[in-house]
Image (tube, rainbow, N blue to C red; front, side, top):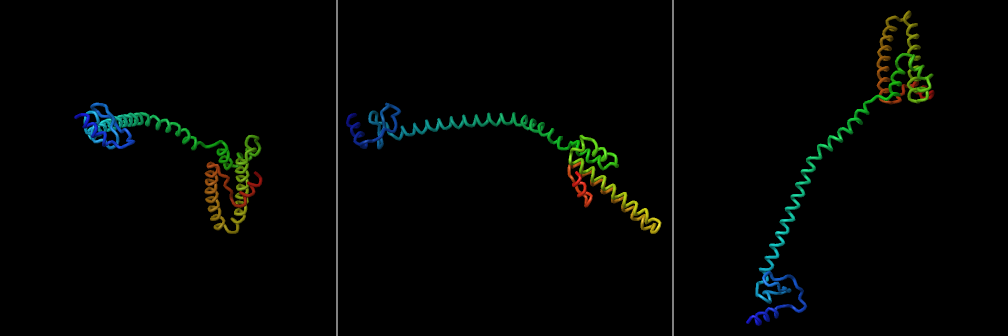
Length: 207
């Protein structure tokens, strides 16, 4: 009887079939098209379900390990991120502070507009006269001061003829000179070679 059942199962095997799995009960091979196990008669679907359950268990184990690794990675990131951020902030603080430091040549450019003595010294002393930036502001300061002196002398001659008009022009000239002085100080502090009309061209030519 068992041989007859086995023979009926063997008759259902396709010629040249390929083994797909083993029976979970007796270890016999299943081939394509098998409905029952050749040796013990176990339905092939039951074996497939056992295979699916093992696959599901393996997938669940892999998913659990992946979740554990992701949790460890997030914990490591949470611990190390503040340290890295603090390190970046500490490295950026000196750069940010250095951007606000006034360079020596800028200080010299600002001092060139403070009376007539600093620009003359800058044009005579070797450490300063070799730098184009300092020479430019020194010459522009001297030329601007010369223009203001000439304008003052002209207004002084007008006081006897038009005293009210001359005093008004004196006031405007003083306000204009103060505003111009502040502007030139700011531009020199920013490291710019800001050129005034006419005198700026002369200063650039001499620098």
